[in-house]
Image (cartoon, rainbow over all chains, first blue to last red; front, side, top):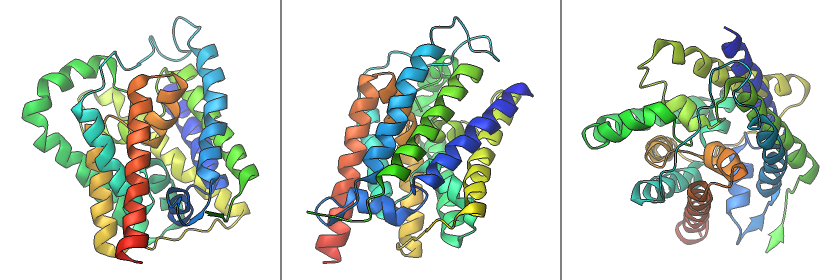
Length: 153
Length: 142
């Protein structure tokens, strides 16, 4: 119950940040990715602002032996850089560049009721589900292992 | 290169809010605020007690953005055609699961932890996103 309330609070601040920074707008995100055109560097500053706070905040948080509302930190283990990581990031990048939505802004944008937002989020969940189905036999052992230590996503 | 529509103050302010949100989720729940992981693992739902906080976080994203919509009118423009929106969504969904993260998980939380995996993933999706936009806007659409 408390954990759900904490997650709601964190989600709200996150969604507010995405809206304030303009990142819920795919046109603005594509303006960042279009560096050879009329470039909008805003996304770089959103990341810089988030990283400045998170680097400091994470350091303070991880100094504790455990989080305040749970028994332990669920942090990704030491997987290396492999083909899955690079291929997955590449596919994600292409999808991101086609529409201008990544998962956070896409979900947050549902607040504004555009049909395309709902279509994108639905397709995104289908893509996630497809990964579970297609990758299941190959990734089952991997998955069971990572269930214990939650990957970095 | 021409710089246009640059909103540095709003970007830094919004970014700081995202950083605070990620810090809170880690400090309170011990979780990383990676949206693709929070959403994708909903589909696994192996442990019932693991579902509620994920739903609440995603709901929070909508509520937080909607709250800003009450005091301002954020522009949202999606130029892609319907088939491209569907294709993009499928690629983002599949790719983030295969690659274990997205802009928030790798780009913010992972880099904040100086994870080499996340730094590489972020470079790869930034470059692929940039190349895709270049091809769509300046080669196909040009």
